[in-house]
Image (cartoon, rainbow, N blue to C red; front, top):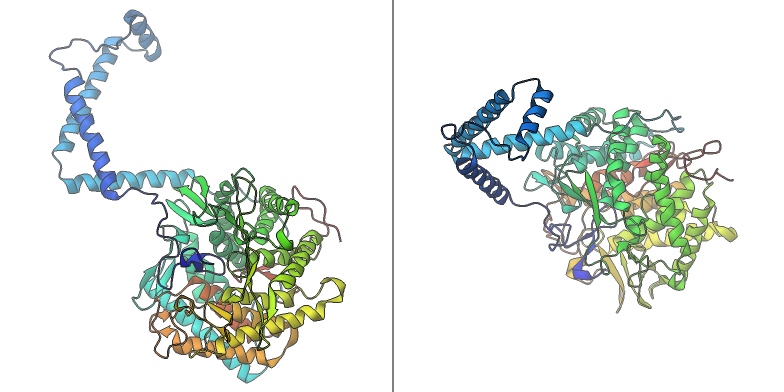
Length: 631
């Protein structure tokens, strides 16, 4: 991904400029006027009103009557007398008195200081916001639905003492990250662990939505950190408020907030998480209001009420991004299941049907699709940033449906076949990697984000066509090995953002702006899936190497920070503790050193932010607006 040096930031797919920089391009349109300008407008209007009152309101000494300006005054007086039951003269006197009182209030306003006026304006603004919140009563009562089978939501203690010791260390790292956020960044979206203050990026808008809290509560529950979980739940119940003026990424809100809330609901059974998830989801639906019903990358919300979508200007002439509109299925199917509202299911199925009708160059899905024309943008395909979770969600839609959504499985298989034919290669040194296809040319570069694919290939091995289960499990192992090499060939034993396979260099970053590590989870994610399917001890060994490196080089007194150069023995910090570090990286490490009966894959499917959602056994259930499930 090149445009202007943008690289994916979060849980996977959103671009960023550089470590420590804002996650959004600086040319993003500002949505709110400055406070000073607003104050100036209000004062100007107020003064104009007051002067108008001086010149145009009736003077009691000069006018015996209040002229309504109507031609048939007698008729009007009769009407007033009939409507009010009072004498018209009394009514005119009352109106005159009201105007005189308003004039006196205006004079008093003008005598107040600037600070007093600002305080009054702020009070009025707060009152308006409170009134809006009262009107925004939240979701309607939800229909009763059976709770899907949930098993293995806690414990999973390994029998081996040394493995248990490692798992306890991961829990301690989670507690340090959470406690630091609790102390220094509580309620903010993320944490600056060195500056020891709150941090946010534009993917969350300009408001404090507590992204780290929502993203982390299911990890806290799984790890048995019950007091911390309770603190998070109380904050969500009392403070998670969507009546804010913010522009947010629909994709990030979906995978982090809705996914996190749904997972917390299924794990704990606490209704507040379900209600908050549905309340938020209702506000995302306007993002689909495009000519082809494709999601816009952003949902522009004014006080989170009137949604208008827009896309990045750099994204191939404002196109929608494949991984953005293709990473909704898991959460939206669960929303339809829980609410009985078919709109969520229908939105994602419409996107799938639209894609099925389109020609695909070499069988590949380009990363950009124009939501106005319904045509592909530039022909750039990757399994890393911009494309990755689209393929992941095709496979997981099939798994989550109890393997009844055969259309999703067929689409996944066809896509993976094209990826293997055009993007997957072996280096001269024997390392299997996934390149990027750009306008008919294969770029021999692989991103850290693409390392999740090793786990995806292993997860999709069972059920693959033509008895190729063994082949895809082996392919997953090869990708895991390549990504481990990208870690092992650095000074810090932490992987770079992207690494090349040409000019004699293999699994090594070349550009300075690709040498950073921002606490990403994808390599550890693949280690965990490979461990679950093979129980090869090397995956736990590799995971422990990564955990030790994170604890040694990324841990600071105020939490955990990304580093800017994994090849430097004296790295500098980016001073950001990403919310996905608690949601994904530490969760996958904890699961890696837990027994398989903790969140068994027969019963749970993890969204792309590592939030577990239960398999929906829909044999006797039909989602509203869908066809009956077929085996």
